[in-house]
Image (cartoon, rainbow, N blue to C red; front, side):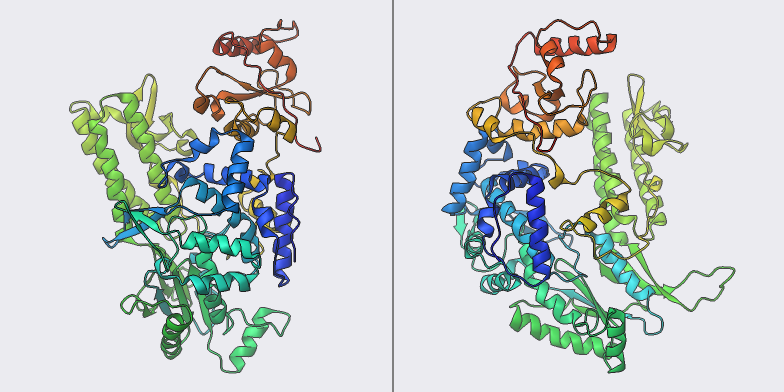
Length: 637
């Protein structure tokens, strides 16, 4: 199937990706992907995606981060990406090492920013092809999926079993999965999954063979995908997809002969097939089955499968078979065990086995140690304001930890976290304020930071005082355990209207998804200002964020902005271009208010509050009329 690459907005791009997903579900393959990947709309979307990631400020071997490209004129950047892709010679990735939990070092490859943009453009167009054909119980690096869904899948396999509980588990560990992927096999799998545009396949091949720079020496890569590359997780999922389906076809996802998959499974059981369930998250996977004999037979087969079909090796030490009723398995940081339900007055002697996921205490201990190191730094910070900033950094770490563990049985874990943090904070504040440190212990609901989180809690915590406000350390126990009620809904995907609605429904919100962001420019305006330093690419991107922040209303009079009556205003245009076009320096005004800010008489109909806003804008403008560009709203408005 040849893809029509003519898209004029992100809405049209979304529709095209939906079509690709639907046709891929039908088993179609695709040509013409290159033109869609390097359409200006796709390039803008790719840069938006990269810009929203913290890693966008990490440079590659050319030492340029995202800001370097954001300062370029719009047309120049688009042409640079298109011409680079046309004659693609990717630069080697910059290799760095990060510590692993076992004490060893994990290599990461940091591509240049331009290579990242090209990778993201390719990922955008090939992901719907792959998503349509990926295994339902694979959760790693896939849209709308997370570790909590993989954990729930494991627990659900135990809870839903009536008689034969799948308590024997193969805990799989692939030796250096990302580093040992065979390029020839991978490209063949990309073709077989439906990517038939050979120009896209050639770009992927060149990315894989780009090599890496370490200690100023270039190393050639004959195998493996660089961990750190945008497209690497997707390629790893493509590589392991056949393994998923090979195991799934045995029982979990059989070729359907009946209307319901459960009827097919019952049919297989009657023919003597032993139940088995695969759950995979990236290169971490487990297979659950009901007998130890079947687990041993399957593991013996899988060792040969990985060695000869995928050119990968399973670790002899780490790939083990575990009886979940005797000891827990380790999966994605959780310890999961099959145990009897908790006794209740109605059922004092339960006989039903259920899955119980608990946080791995060793990992929690390491996380608490890291947080306490940040708390200890408070005593070396001289200014109260800087201490308050450090406390907010600590709070974000605490909330990040508890948000991950909250889907397991975690109340005791949260109590442990609070106790250790409280002790460390007490020692630190004792050194900061030797005689008065207890005066800095404040009730949570009196804190000025994170008021929605702390409202109604009388538990005391340590805080610093900034003028009349207290900025304090939050508590883990405020976050309650939140077990997922149901397994992941396989209809949830960003490539169907139903899937997107299901995603929004789970959060009970009506926010617009990223690809629904309307373009606030047209080609004429972009061409008119293509060489402007002030109206560069970053300006055209960030004013969309400013529009969403202002909720489509004029910041002065509050009226809804409409086509022909909306203008984006630089609050302080005299700033340097790399600061002038940041979101806080942009605001949306109606045409009349914009003229008033730039010196026109203030109409008598304006309220005192509106006049005050105008005067503040005028002060910041410092009588410098920047001639802000008038814009056209999205099509259809």
